[in-house]
Structure formats: structure tokens, C-alpha cells
Length: 392
Ligand SMILES: Cc1ncc(COP(=O)(O)O)c(C=O)c1O
Image (cartoon, rainbow, N blue to C red; front, top):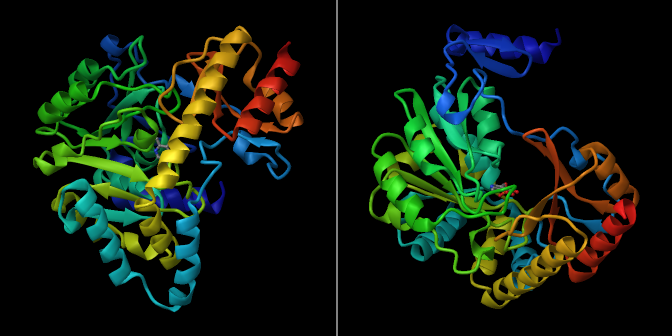
């Protein structure tokens, strides 16, 4: 056994997690889990979505089309780059006051108080810290499957169990089943809207009425990473304004094109923000340069509108071209498209990499799928040509 395993075991013993869970390698298997026939889940809540071949762990230096992480090929905005350069000179100072300035700016935009905003180095940081703040003593969390796994993975790693609720046939969240899955050990419900990796949406009115009821029992966490790329996308932030125990999570990695600069934020009750701040000093992870870049990007309407338009054009092109090639892509509201493939995931990903195209592959319900992110028009055209060549 290596030392990290040993440390992990010691830590689990110390936190008392060992009392309710048996640790096998990285997986925590709850001995209290029961099969729930309503969800068709196995007693160990076998996930439907599995990333069994990780393309992001390969050498990606020479890609002709990098379409694997839902990055924005046009960003950051020129105004953000200028602000970043100008902020470099402030690099000797901690971000305290500047982060408050940004929090106030976001509070104005979201219609809440500055104290209800938590800024972080990317939204992954919020997802992980929220999982820490709620699941250190175990319990269970509920989310859709297939869905975005970041918060689920962290929660499971520290001892929570995952109740995965299959998406409905139209790929929207099965909110009825999710509500029925809430029990006295549930720590939170996670909703990703639009959802990754399907790119699909759940109607906002349904989410709102679900969250109004369910947040009286457990917090409802809503990840809106792609909401700005969606036509007519409406945030659920009004629920936070109305005082419900709802947490909204946003990122600067997508429409703002700042994935490598790491900025995200959470909008929630003061109480939820404080609970995280008691545990960790989130702002200590933010660089002053990224902060100023994000402030400039927030108001750069021209850049944001252009990104949305170009993303939409690439998405229409990819969707139609996939159809022309005989694929059955899922209609997406985001910057990526999921489509079933008919060769094994590893072979598919490797053939595409040989062509210089980086995409992602997943197994969903034992069937192979690929997810392609939108790039420039040149990149997505090259993707379609490559796809035609390797499978045609
Ligand atoms: C749904 C969703 N949430 C959160 C993230 C994390 O983004 P970041 O940590 O870059 O803000 C991603 C990234 O792809 C995502 O797809």
C-alpha cells in the first residue's frame, strides 16, 4: 500500500467516515445503500456515464482541432487581455479589496448582496468546496446520470454516496424521480442546466417549481456553466433573490473564454457562503490579473455576443454535418454536441488523435459516445472531414 493510501485511511479514520463506509481503493462503498427499483439502480448505484478512455491525459500539443474541453476558441476578450496586462503591476498585493469590488459588480448583475457572492478560481473550485462543506460527514447526494461529475466525484471521495437518477428520454432531468430520491441523509441535489455531456436543457419553470419545494428540505445546487450560450437562457438566480436555499454556480471558462485564467463564482444565501468561508479561504486561490480580466470581460457585450453567435454557427454546422454523415447527434444548447459512435471509444479517440483532432469519448449505458466541443469554423470543418475519413 502506498503512503497516500495510508494517509487517506488515517484521515478517514480520523473523520469517522470509516464507521459508515468500507473503503476499496478510491471507491467508497456504502454498506447502507439499498437498491431502488424506481430508478433501476444497482445497490452500488452503478453509473451510466463512464469515461473509460481519458483523451485529456494524452499529449495534446500538436492538435489541429482542440475540441475536447468545451473551451472558447475566441477568448479571452481583447478588453480582458488589456486589463490583465495592466493588473500585472498589482501582483505584489493580495486580492482582498479587488475581489470585493468584483463581488459587488456581480451582486449588481445578479440582483443580490455582495455577501451572497463567492468568487473562486474557476467553478470547479466551488463544486469541490460545496461538496466538502456538505459531505464531510457522509450522507448522499442526488444528480442526473449522464451528468457533470465533478461535484459527484468529490462528494464520493470524501464518503458520500451518489443516487444517480437517469435523465428522461428527452434528456431533461427527471425532477420527479430526483425529488422522490431525497431522504433524511441527502446533503444536496445537483442540477446542471444546460447539462454536460448531453447539451440538453430542463425547462426553467420546472426547475424553479422543483427547487422551491425541494430546497425546503435540502439545498438545490444549480450549475449554469453554459447558460449564456443558450438561446433565451434564463438563470434560476431569482430563487436565491427570493430566499430559497438554492446555490447558483457560474464560470468564466465558457462564454468569457477564460478557462486557463480560472474564475468562477457562486450566488447563494449569506449562510451558504459563510459555511464555505469557514472551511476554506476561497479568494486566496484567485490571481489579481484574472480578477481584473474577469471584471473587464463582464461588461464586454460585443465580445460575448460575438462568441455566442459564432458558437451557434459552428453548432448548427456540426449538427447538420453529423446528420449528413448518418450520425444521430443530440440537439445541443451549449458549446458541445454528444453523438453515439459505432466503434469502441478508445479506437475512435485514438484514430481522431492521429488526425490531430481532440474530442472526448464516453460509455453511456454500455454504448460508445463521443462529445465534440465547438471550435472555430475551420476547426469544426476539419473535425467533420476527419470523422468522414476515419469512419467512411
Ligand atoms: C457543467 C460544468 N460545470 C463546471 C465546469 C468547470 O468549469 P471551470 O472550473 O473551468 O469553471 C465545467 C467545465 O467543463 C462544466 O462543464
